[in-house]
Length: 69
Image 1 (tube, rainbow, N blue to C red):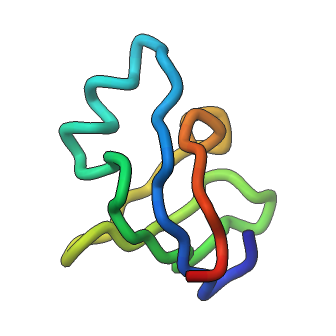
Image 2: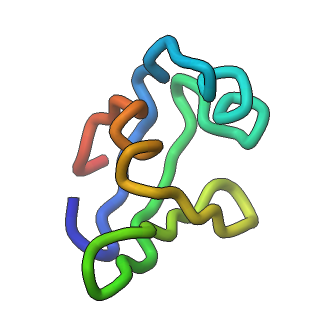
Image 3: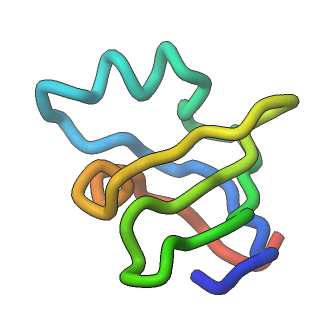
């Protein structure tokens, strides 16, 4: 995804972090927006509702989305 892209969360893969990511608002049907990426691509900042969430690429890889809503 590129900066400014909007996406809809489709699924959060099963992992140790799945419950925590869901608690932070990353659940199926939720719209997210890519706000920033660090110079080396890690971490990534996403807008979830009315707050900004920073995730490492490894954590973001657990979130399946549909881009271009």
